[in-house]
Image 1 (cartoon, rainbow, N blue to C red):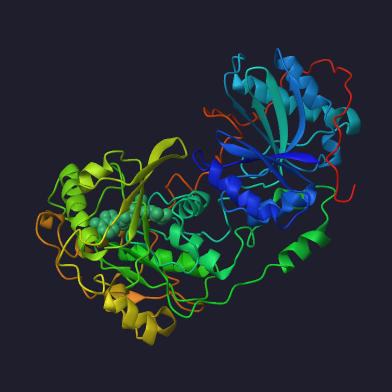
Image 2 (image 1 turned 180 degrees about the vertical axis):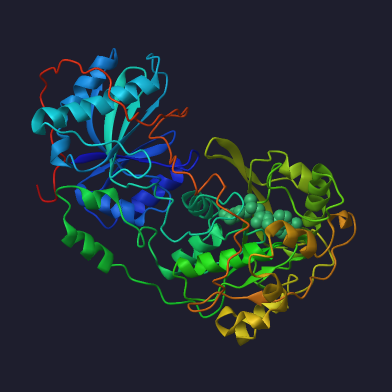
Length: 527
Ligand SMILES: C[S@@+](CC[C@H](N)C(=O)[O-])C[C@H]1O[C@@H](n2cnc3c(N)ncnc32)[C@H](O)[C@@H]1O
């Protein structure tokens, strides 16, 4: 059996282990082992690596363990890598990249270790073929990952290639989009399951919605992308094709259960575009509306899960006359009123780096779970919106009739019937309607209404997303500067403290090659 390590966003280890356990139900060989900060160890045959890459929503990568040793210095690392049979997996025509992560390693320079690993791989090829593979730090064919703790060094070959949060459907990123695997993990931690009502009132580019909608439709996260293992010498296309052919799409839901909204029309357009690119064929009603004005989209209580704006770059949008802090304060105070009055019975989850959010909302959280979004420490706060918070709550829990009517009747706002029917959307589509401009113009109610009772929801149009529907004209103003999905840092293999460095492209002086026995090659299925 081969050992694998699946890194994930820190805090998601238990959720990943649970997910891997579910994936393992389809394989007699896949075994899930221990969780460590930043990932989960498991083992299986090579096809299990295919399987995890295809089905895991939470893993960032699937790293195949090639060799392990105790080390005292850089030369021990060089020797181990030199003795590893890389030529059985790839060749001199493949490009490589080396990344190193360490925790409590006594060695001084990660850059130097990275260089030694790269040298060892290249020296091995040069000794055998008089040629070496080139380094490509941007789009390498093969990624080699080293991990060091105090005494042990492990060398992995990455079976994934691009980090797994890159699902292959996102062409447009909003402001600070969540990574897809983090969004999927949050859905799991929140206890959301297909069929349950889900609402993101600050949906941005729609990452949470896309992940949830793919789960409803039974689209595996890896169905629309390529993997590094497809370039391995012994890649076996037949079982891989069979694995993909075995994917069973789920019946499309008759009624919408997933809903999203955002103050920005450009973001709503982007979310719609992303849902379509993600292959979603059923109605996901979207609405451009200030979050304080939203109503529950369904009479049946569900889960509100959102990643609100935070920080200087992506602040709350609303009354432009207010200072950033004041705007955030008054926005959250008012949004809290919205939740109490209109979302009785719902469970509201906020994923944020603002650890003072409950204070701003003036609500006591039922639970807070720490997570990391890249290097940023975050919390998932849970608030149970118990009925009776506000006696004025209506019998239908204040559900939004425009959601239900428009979705159920296939009224004009549905995307497959044309966007022309959505006057607000139509006006703001296109490049000329930049996100900031939209935000300033579109704020339905200024946040200074904080202390006032929540006004009746603006009857804005909700537009669904179906195949063939939606807008192809996505505003370019949002750019791709967001950290998450735009970066390929992925997640470190194991440690709590992560540092990494790409392999330099230059060659240092070559060292004498020691004699070493090769590590065993990971077994193939049936072997
Ligand atoms: C951090 S982003 C959400 C990113 C999203 N999770 C994604 O993956 O793309 C926060 C979003 O809140 C929206 N927003 C800011 N102020 C708002 C307000 N007052 N009402 C509704 N949405 C607002 C922004 O337009 C932005 O899209």
